[in-house]
Image (cartoon, rainbow, N blue to C red; front, side):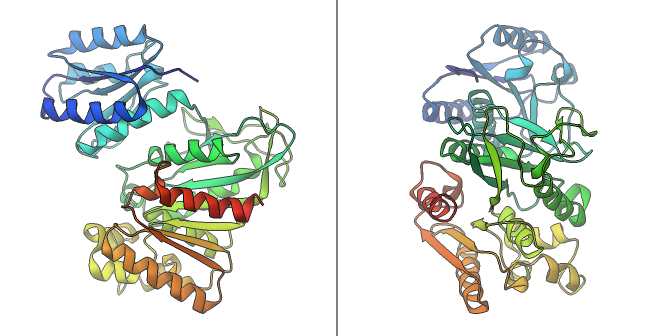
Amino acid sequence: MTDVRRVLVVTGPGLVADPGLIDQVTEAETAAFGVASRVLATDDEVALRDALDAAGRDEQCALVVLPGPDPAARALLTRPGPHAVRTVWYDLTDTGAVPVTEGSVHCAGRGMWGVSWAIRHAVHRLRHPARRIGYGPDADQWAELRMPTGHAGTSVPVAVLLHGGFWRSNWGADLMDAIAIDLTARGYASWNVEYRRPDRHGWAATTMDVAAALAALPAVVGSEPVAVATGAEPVAAGSSARGAEPAADGCRLDLDRVTVLGHSAGGQLALRLAADGGRLALAVSLAGVLDLVEGERRGIGTAAVPNALGGSREQLPEVYAAADPLSRLPLRVPQVVVQGAGDDLDLVDVNRRYAVAARTAGDEICYLEQPGGHFAVIDPNAEIWHATVAELDRRLRS
């Protein structure tokens, strides 16, 4: 754990972005964390390298670098040094997967808004480090485990987190950092899952990964490692199916109290996981896309549904039938469906209709709709998140 006091945002040569807007975004995000900030524009590879070296000597500094297009500057993404463990590299455009030095992180394709997320991730990963564990051989098959403190000798409930982003690869598990940290502080183990997105790997890979990440839970605190992607600790094989092996801080995973929480597109994945018979005590959708057929008809998320599933409902009726939470009712798993009233009205409509249909089908469901937008449901400071956690506690901790 690092006591982050400063955030340095460095822009590389040739970056196409308004400097004043980067300043504005940086000031707003760092103020929310209560830390100082500085934005440094570099004109060439030498200046960028010097900035990395200086940041590497400041152990209380989180570093966000927008390297820009210059080849010499981009070569620094794989340059080792003390700065690496404190660096989040961010590209405004979707570059695809880019190699970086071990300890660093690369994000891309979120536009200017992504600067905010890069700053958040840079601070979160230093202040509240996670244990990254691979559950498969691909670079996107991993999850981050955070265990609560002060629970030695006890079994703790587990929150499996599935991020959204309309199933597109430019969004990742860092979206769930804040609630992973919040849940861990409240006494839950958090298992924040990354998975292969269908835009690069196909819909079947996404579905398989989510199931595999859940299935890996019994082994995450054992021994006997298996091969996994570089940069992720291997998942363990051979530990008890009841999660009996203690974690490093002495508490255990209670696999009879596992809840999955999915945000946006992750809400669909969470309820699909429940429908497929995943071992879950509770499934939670946070502003989820729960009616894929109507979502495809309305073109929600700029045709996100057919792009993810690989075609229209007419072309792929069996795929839609298996993937669509509304079509899978009853799920026979207790559910909490959370929706911000200030969100996209199509999502409000979908979630209200889903809640009615689930009750009619005989499922046990709690529907929470309160003021807030699409990201309020994963904001630990929002009232709608507090209401969600209260419902989790009532069901899993009472």
